[in-house]
Every structure is written in C-alpha cells, then in structure tokens.
Image (cartoon, rainbow, N blue to C red):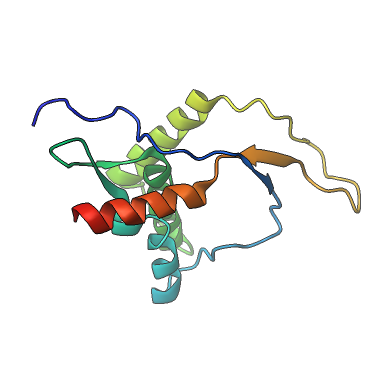
Length: 147
C-alpha cells in the first residue's frame, strides 16, 4: 500500500467557534437503550473510518477515536452499575483509558477552570474550538465517495 497518505487529514476546521461548557446540560444520555446507543454511535459515523491517500487506506481520526472510546467506557460503566461483584474493565476499556489520557496530555489545554463552585449566576468559561461540524461534513463526503 505504501506510505502515500497524509499523516493528518488536511481539512480546515477554521474559523474557531465559541463553545461554552456547561456540565448541567445533558446532550447525550448515558443509560443503555437502543435509542441512546444509536445516538452515541451516530457521533462516529461508519465506525469513524475515513479513507486517505491514493490507495484509499482506512483510518480513524483522533476525534472519532476519542468519542468511540468515551462510548466504550459509557457501556462498561453501565454494565458494571448495580453490581456488587468486583468487575475488572475489559481490554478495550483499558485501551481507551490509556488512549484518552495520552490525548489529554498531548493537547495540554492550558485554559483555566475554577476548582470551586461557581457563584450563583456565574457562567463557566467559553472555549474557542475547532469547528467539528466541518469534520462531520468532510467525513460524510469522504465516506460517500470512497465507501
């Protein structure tokens, strides 16, 4: 197959978009159900696979890998919930814990976050984020063309 493929997917996610993090807002449910599972897997379409290079080699991009790992951990936690037995996480969950830790360290986000409860009426900080909708749009097009 060779090595004729980009090391990073060359799409633009600019300009950055503001995102206010609010832990009280539930965007996706965590409990196990067919509906919830479908909502989570929709976050990494086609198992997060995109096709790069002249030979259309399959890759997963880090964003999809990370979301998939969070989903795997969600499933493991829900399976362990309510059990009185000592249950060890599976190999895939352990891989995800290590992978997510490495990605957090790699990005070394230096935004300050309060360590105390925010005063009533205060808002958490706003981040400037890459526009992930552009990633989803590009992945959809890539999967349509190369699948």
